[in-house]
Image (cartoon, rainbow, N blue to C red):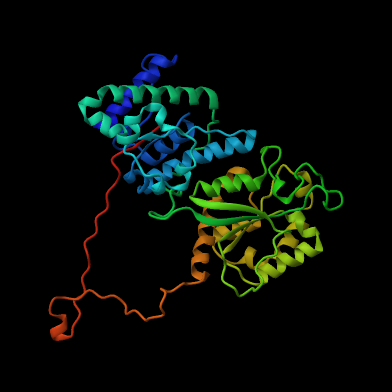
Length: 407
């Protein structure tokens, strides 16, 4: 009820501040979906076309996988917009429903550049829920909602985020990662030549001063792929670092446990260099399942098309494990990703696969002291007398957040 009132108040202010025709809808809240309507398709359509995304911050919001999926679906649109135009698109306007301590914010929310104090000190301490529930704060509530509406209209007018393709909401990952865990480290490594060491005859339009400047989806994209990948990985609540394969010496001991999961972005033209190809083959032979290889392949690159069979053969010969084993998504990523949208769709799957393999192979640190601890057991009140163990299955309960996303 209180969220619906906030939504109505916001829509009223937005209508007054814009030239939207009478009767038009100024926004969307997912409680509006009618019974029997395809909720996933409808929500995916709205998230692909709305101009501003308004999450209502609360502890329960960030514990919700569904809310994390909505955030990720909208955030990828902003990342694609940035990639195409090389211009950031900050179109998320957060609202404090219930104040959340900074240390409890997931990475995507923590990185938002937003000053909540512009809406009033009482709003920062009590949130919209506190203002709307107590009559003595009615004036502070009206001011906060009015300022929030002004910010929404300003962002919609200045950012101009491009519409996107509706995502499959059910298959989308959550932007908040695993509940109760902060941003996890992940490495993005680029194996590509620079414009100064290209294979003979290779055009330089796709390359820059460093390997990290490689832009395989030129001219569709105006931004290097490594930094698009970094943004996508960060939107999954990972702390990403970007490095060059040529400048990375790698672990000294192939049997040593990994330090973090890794995504390797590989340009097939990099295999023309014998030294680089030998290092890649050695990495593949060492069996590092926590490293997922992604090979972009641009159909608009006429040189890539002309040498496709030769480059593909070199790829399979150099990386037989990565291209022929593992999950279907990993094999598909290693054999060629044809567009930036396809790259954004497959990257969460290969990131998850690399993260799971990292957890399986990472070093385990037992508690200090070296004492053996018995496996905990649930015992009944007569266990000590009869020497038996009573096993209990505790009742579980799950709840969804009260606050919703406003688009």
